[in-house]
Amino acid sequence: MATTSTSTPAVVAIAEPVFTSQERLALAGFLAGYTGLTREAYALDLRQYATWCHQRHIRLFEARRADIECFARDLEAKGRTRATVTRRLCTIAGLYRYAVEEDLLDHSPAAHVRRPRLDYESHATGLDRNELGAMLVAAGLGPAPEHALVSLLALNGLRVSEATGANIEALGTERGHRTLTIIRKGGKVVTIPLAPRTARAIDLAVGERCEGPIFLIPDGRRLDRHGAARIVRRVATRAGITKIVGAGTRSGMHSLLLRWTLGCRSATCRKPPPTLTRAPRSATTVAGPHSTGTPPT
Image (tube, rainbow, N blue to C red; front, side, top):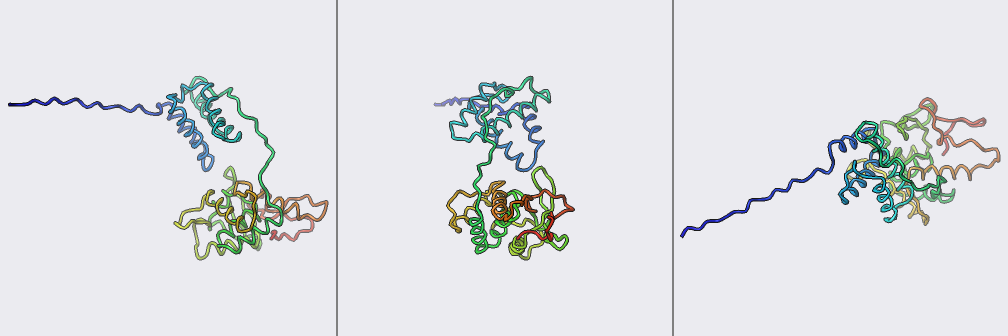
């Protein structure tokens, strides 16, 4: 007896694209205007916003002002700081403004979104002179790269991105002083004098290498800001410092400012230390009226 089998036709689900062509064009064009850490930060902001919209079945170009306000309240409910919420909203507003300027959108739903008020006074945790000295001693007793990194942050006042982005080829000598050419915020190229202690620490950290990043991780890649933060916290722990110390973009500068302020013996001491100046490439030191032009140690 012959049997017949009936087969059920397979149902193929067609996945709907997350972004429309205009949304993709706006995202790519907006991010193309930035580079480096700024681009990474904006990409993270937009990724989180797009994920939030996708979970609620809201198209980017169909979002309303109320939706963006709800996104901000959701960030606050998750414990994000006011600065973080404000930056997310600024990025979103920038995306929609770009879309309007490129005639991809009629109007920006983020144009009148309220943003949290910010306290622009710096509350960064700085180190006093004794704590800074303890940090330098603890770093000097550890591996050479840790000593070099802490010296650049504390004695030369570099941002963590400037320190981790420095290359061996950028080391040099001008007027008898060791120098380092770095890329500051905004892509500005500046040559700074290195304190003698910093120069010796960098030489030990570099070793026999002639090119590439000054700071490497064990697998040979460049040290990033997260790895630098772990190094600073590790050195602070060895130094017995209990306050929260991080390798933020300005933690080294705060320490240097405190070291200079506490070290001023005269009431007329008003000029900042040479390493805090934004000198052009041709000027590597700032000589005071009684200065010999020697970088600070």
